[in-house]
Length: 547
Image (cartoon, one colour):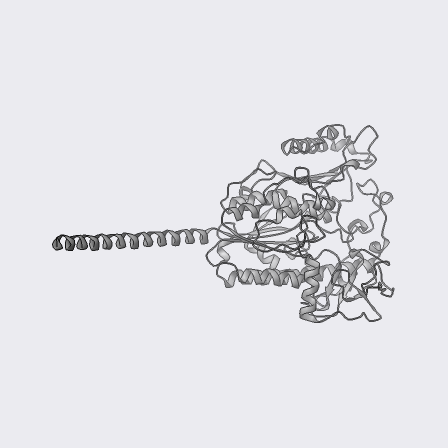
């Protein structure tokens, strides 16, 4: 009996050893699989998405502008691909940014203007970051958001709002966070000196230039101590110089947040990190350190500054003309500050690129640089965005992915915001959801693409739009015929090779317009095909439109 018990103990011991060995082996296999999985995740490319607000396509030296200093944007172009003819989906912030995130048109997103940021009818289209997050990516977003807040889900950080948004209750705004950053790092707000006004973004003093909408006035304050907006209530009217540290700026605040997050990104997990700079959007105020890099007297005037806008899609009679921006001295001041702001952004782009280098992940990181829309900056005597002229609708777009995307590549084919979504999905190996663009990989690799045009649309469709289509050297701006009342706005056709300033409309009231009937009709048909493909309404209105 005792011998039998001894044998049982012996068998139990053997079984225990086998079990322990199996368990140890199982742990080894599990650990090995986790290691392999971690390595696989590490090999998946990261995404560093850098966006600016209101940056013109030519506000980079790599775009041929020798008057501006942008060594880091130029570096992305030199080490990757530059799309020389990239266009905004809509030359205003919220529709454009929503199109970038989703790859869908403004009509499919139901985001037609900035007021739609709070709309309840926006479809739940996936964003590229949401797709990446659902596939194991660590996603973060810093800086200016300015899109419907429903698209800000899936980020590991709480995304700050740009304006008040009913869908983002109790979420801190980017402006409030910026002001808190200033107080924490640069002390409390001081009263402005006699020659200073208060910037509506930072709520701190700056020296106004002559072009400033409130130049020569005395800063007024409300009873609660806040600066009054009674004498110039637009950020676009704030144009001047900060006589304080360069880091006491919105660019530095947003760049610092993104850089801090980039330094802390997980080592063994693919990530997508967005740094969305508010500048060079108004207020047009630059730190003195950056303004001193330029000579205002050497700023070149826009060659189309004196355009009388006759036979043009935008006419003097249909808008309030601001004569400041036809004044040579004031136009130079605006460009001076604008260029200084772009150069400060460029410095922070460099810090982000350097961090990618220091982490040893540059070869496994896709860098995308883009802006939501441009800035007229005095072209045709106009400022701001909202136009289908090149200064407003033509944007910078650069992509770098070492050893995958050829260095120094230039793509001249017209492309759009709509294409960024599918391109990121393609290069990260994701299944591409339904969208209104296409991956740009074939164009980057030197192959022809059936889509060789870009379309931009305007949400105020009750006035006919307009729509814009760019194909090869040709560009057409067309107002749709809405209803029976004759369309009063002027349609336009430009050859950007022979007329890059868009001064010579070949249709409209041009007595030789018949020479361009075939080109105009071909562009009209291409636009209609795009509208059908993207399920954009108003094809009947386009058919009724006379060119």
